[in-house]
Image (cartoon, rainbow, N blue to C red; front, side):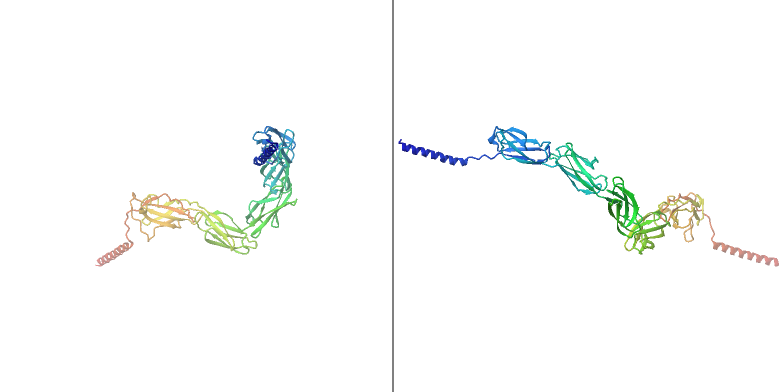
Length: 510
């Protein structure tokens, strides 16, 4: 082949090879850059961190090292997949700040990008940061050693406010109640066993509470205070009037009782102020109030009803159940007092209502419910003979709720069945009874088939005794001549006597 053609062919082959290279190179995949990721990306000493590496195929079989900041924490041989995962714990002695996790080869050359890890500051926060004794406070903490017990201190000493274990990120949440303490700032400290600690201030505020928020004049009210000064003198004011004094204990607490002063109805401030100028107040509402001189009794009991907080110079009406018994006029301070007698009413609770144009209050009065004694029967005596219009007599009974009335029953059966009833008299005021002219006579009955009678008592409170034991009597079959017949016989006898005397006289003269 001539030299000229050989040179052309060689040039052509080279061109084809170059063309093929240019065509094939773009089709080959480009290898991604090595990279690492961290989880988590922040925490405290002891936090376990997961490092994941990817795209390390180019370093298959090579030994690489993992660094936390400038500290080597682990090494490994890159697997064929170019993907790996390792775990490490943040060193105990690191200080808060930013650290980088990086990868180096055996010659110290960095591989891939580095990733930051934030070591958190040891810190606590309080929510809320002020309040009264007993306030529930939540402490949020971070930067403490993972899994270690964190102990809480109040004013530098253990005050039984508790412990908690830091979570896998060195964080925690703990809630406790502020213990008894004086007014002002108090230091709350959280500390783990490795000495990691932080502190924050909680401000104790003075606070008072009342055992009742409303009442009437003269009511006894107890005020309790916390968070005042150390052994400080405390004065209690009702509106502007001083009503009590006391001295706090070493933790700034006190408790004192006062009587509600004479005030018109309305809402007033109860204020506590100590010698260190710590103060707090609560509202108390003075309303109308009613009291009875006694809350139980019998019919006729004299009861005084007193009221306070009513309309000044207003007319007050007093009712027993639905019956008006008295009226009164409230004075310049809204107070009044009036007496009434308890009327006849059944045993048990009754409502006394006291009202004016704006107020209406009710109290209960208990009417005695004890039954009166059982009457003792006197006449006619047991199994005795009685007149057809006999008189019945029994012992009078006494009772707290006078007057006492009686019920008398007469029957032909000792069970006093309805069919056997001869006579029934109710509401008898006296302890005896005579069958009247208008009532039927008692028919004669044999001694073997007598009448029966019994009595029970009822007081003015409608309390009834049991029936007396029945007593028997009978009415004999005796003839009683009518009075008219007697007069007629007398007249006939007198006429006969006159006739006989006349004849006798005529005979003697003859």
